[in-house]
Length: 164
Image 1 (spheres, rainbow, N blue to C red):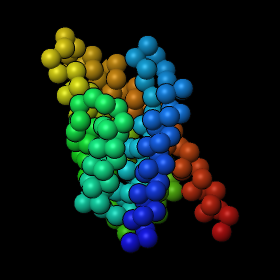
Image 2 (image 1 turned 180 degrees about the vertical axis):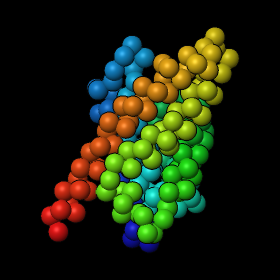
Image 3 (image 1 turned 180 degrees about the horizontal axis):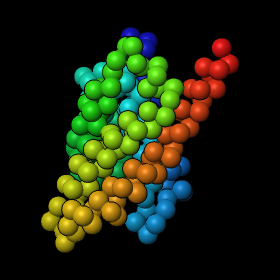
C-alpha cells in the first residue's frame, strides 16, 4: 500500500510541475512542452504492470483534464492507453535493466507517441488539420522533447546504481 502511495505522490508532484513550471520552457510557435507525467507513468507501468499503469494513467489524466478546463476525459483516455502500453514492459527479470538504461528513453518515446497521437487526433477533430500535420506539428516534437527529459531519471538511476 505504501508503494502505491509513493507512486501517487510522484505522479501528483509531476502533475503540479507540469501545470505550473513546464509552460516556461515551451518551444516552437505551437507551444510544445515535455510531458513529465508520461515519464512517471512509464515508471509506474514498468514497475507494476498494465492494470496499475492504466489506473495511474486514468487518475493522472483526469486530474490534468480538471486543471486544463477543456475536453474532460480526453487526457484521461490518452494517459490510460499510454499507461497500459507501458505495462507491457513489466518484467521482473528485466525491470532494473529497463529503468537504469537508455531502453527507458525508448519506452517513454513509444508511450509518448501513443499518448500524443490519441490526444491530438481527438483534440483537432473537426479542424482542417490532416493527420500528417498533427504528427509533424505536435506528436513528434512533443515526443522528442519528452524523450530528452526522460534522460534525467536514467542518469540519476545510473548514478545511484554506481554509488552502491
